[in-house]
Image 1 (cartoon, helix red, strand yellow):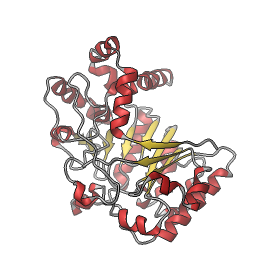
Image 2: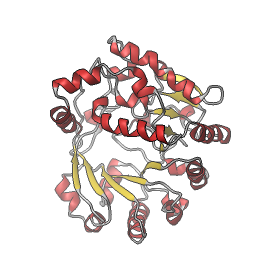
Image 3: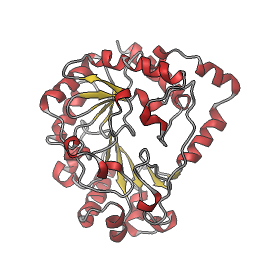
Amino acid sequence: MPQELVSFSIAGLRQKVQKTLFSPVASVFINRLPNRFYLGHIPQLSIALTRICNADCVFCSYQFLERDQRKHMTDDVFQKVVDGLRRYRIHSVQLSPNLGEPTLSPNFIRRVRAIRAAGVRRIDVTTNATFLHKVGIEDFLDDAGPDVIKISFPGFNKEMYERVFRYKDYPRVRENILQLLRLNAKRRKPKSIYMLLRGDIPMEEQMRFPEMIEAKGLVTAVATMVEVDSWNGKITQEMLTGNLKLVSHPPLIQNRPCQLLRELTVYPDGSLHGCSCRNTDLDPDLSLGNLLEDDLMQAYQRLNPVYDRWKQGQFPKICQACNMYTDPAYGFLGHLRQRAEHMFSR
């Protein structure tokens, strides 16, 4: 299986994008695109099957999430999700919006299969691998299961794992990850698996662990997190361990609303919000309705005034302190492809 090692730098990625994509001509063109170009259809739905997590990572704002927000998605909300996926021919689903470990959701495999049966072609999940043995690794790797699996993990070292994730079952998690990778490698068509290393020691040391040497040959790619964001000021440098460092705050481009805004997210209670990334406190500026009462597309269209205000320099409160601004020009070609696929799937 092909694999590569990626040292993931948010600041470095921004610089690379700006150098390779943004000629003056391209910038002028993209700046003038109407809202309907981005909001004409729902390219991906982010589904929070749960907002409960069993880890307590030093770099994550889950530790600050209010208790009444820590809940699983109800059956009636989930059925509305499935209905919306089918009705609007949404082909891509992301099961890991901001906070929560998706595999903790009751009936996780059954729900993933229901999402697949609704016509979804790509299911993307990020997991800490703590619960894979309960979910069933073979079922997880089934054809109806997730297509893209991202493993969030500090690295194969017990002390570092407990220091960064503050979770005590390292031997089980280690075994879950290795078993997942080994079984996937035996599949006729292996799934795409990425390791997102959140360790607090230098990358070179992480790569020397015996388990990591094996894992590198079984994954699609390994990305080491060399920077973390502040989750809108909640995480401070003093809270981080070892080599973990906070990333700098990027400037917001007024003419181009953040690409992450249009990642429509359904939360366990049915509430709909823009941005699946750092909108953990559910900013009222990005509140779009509730799936139990509102049509999915009608709710999505409520992003139009958000876009209009952004272009006037009135940024949502959550965005003003966010470290994760993503220029939509970066995904411009991918969005064109999604639009074409949606049109020809009718």
